Length: 341
Image (cartoon, rainbow, N blue to C red; front, top):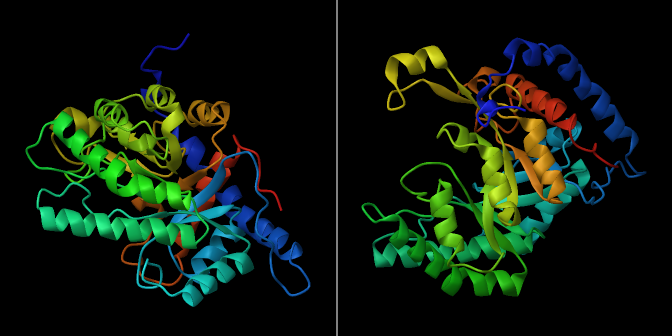
């Protein structure tokens, strides 16, 4: 039997990274498959719905990025806000986005909206943030999605229980009626930062104790638990009925640096694409399959090793970033049913 902290055993990076050449060659075959599935008008049908998790990527909106996601074998995209993708768009602009996704053969699984501080200590700013997030929930509905990812908010200097009550009150009073009316859900990612106090299980529990509705849950990202030395598998089981969306990102702990600078220093951890860090992905994905999670598992690409700097605003991804997404799809696809036409 493995020890309780077995998930810290470091993966063989070279073994995983050595699949790169095969993974990159896969893109052409998948693109050819997508082309063969096109109808008479050249339109690729959207992926059929399945009872399984949907492998996706997190991306800003552009036709080129949606097309790449489909060509690389992903079923969906999780889209972040920007000039061409936001709650202020007209109905015709939204229909054009949906048509672009249909033509690419990809579905928009959910949206992200991390900007508003739901519990801002300033009453005016809090009201504005709450109103902005209601518009995001409405935007989600207009797109035909059912989930909006966000943060839990932050109140500098406040204790955990006070923060949990403030966020629970905002959800119960402001967001829950909208979620019920539009049949949408929301949840927060556990990224540790001052604007997101609920990044640890104790804070998550404090919120859920005050929010019985399952329309509030987690955008579960195992990488954030690893960097806090929390076992993500145990957390996934603990909150299995609150996992509404998943981010697929790995974390590498660089032990020689950690030994020199300690956990309060810099440079001892970094985010990686799935399979090139410490997370036990077969075990984590088994949890998702056993709880019958069928939402999006979205690759959140923050791995500088597989990226080119200062290209985030380009209409298409640079090839190096595409390579990272292709490797992530190949790795995660070992443990999940494949994309269905």
